[in-house]
Image 1 (cartoon, rainbow, N blue to C red):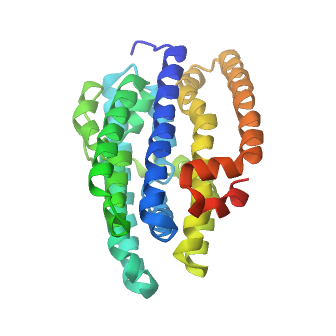
Image 2 (image 1 turned 90 degrees about the vertical axis):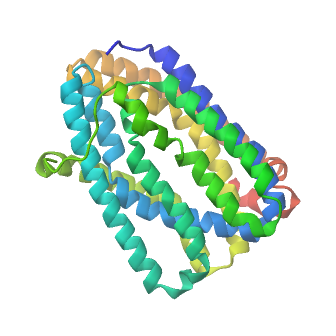
Image 3 (image 1 turned 90 degrees about the horizontal axis):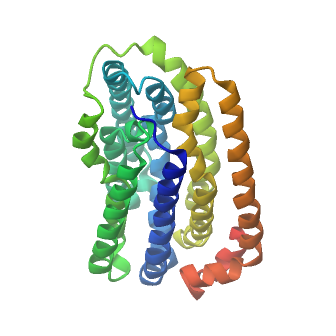
Length: 329
């Protein structure tokens, strides 16, 4: 594989990240004023609930796959074999996740009012697994990722303005959100053939792959609990209105965090390649540069958000969401 420029990849990833920021900045002010806090709360509760089953389906596979496939990116045969093994494990974990989701929906009757919403949002798990987007990242194909993301976001934006017109359209909003975030993964089924052939195989070498996947899963489990448990707990204990207020602050914070953390996904494949070569000098140099850039962006982002929380919430959500200023700060 021709080694791609980190600067070029960084610029492309910044464009992708900016589109992921601009898209909700355009859609959420519209959605928040159409659906109002209660229905926004329903959608965000469903999304938070699904995140646990998405975590079960993905385990630590995405991070592990990027690391492992990057190390063999120059050997098409090895890349295809390793990708197929990881993809097959992901198919199995996805089946387990859907079985657990079905049992949960049948067991906890309080979720009955959210059932249709949750089923719609759960399709993102299937799209994520079939798409195997980690292969594109491992191959540092950020040009394709960026163009694909922009195309689906523009299409989703058009669909949102056409079909989401009043409070009762929150299910349509949920479906369009899934289409925007995960629908593009279907295109990967055909696109990834340029790198290697990825198929389901029963020769998965569970012992070889599962231990590092589970170790990474522990990290992802902590991240998921940290980022989703608050919204889920609030949805169980209080009303959809409170969830709408709090999750709006959460969404704005998440947009800002994406800017700060986007660099990590750019350097991960290159870091994995350096590690496979045991080139610790380049690893340390890349780590230093990454940390400096994270600090340069991160500290002003925190300070600015705290100082301007009321103004940010008013612009993004309108006066109906002004209570979100404090949790945002």
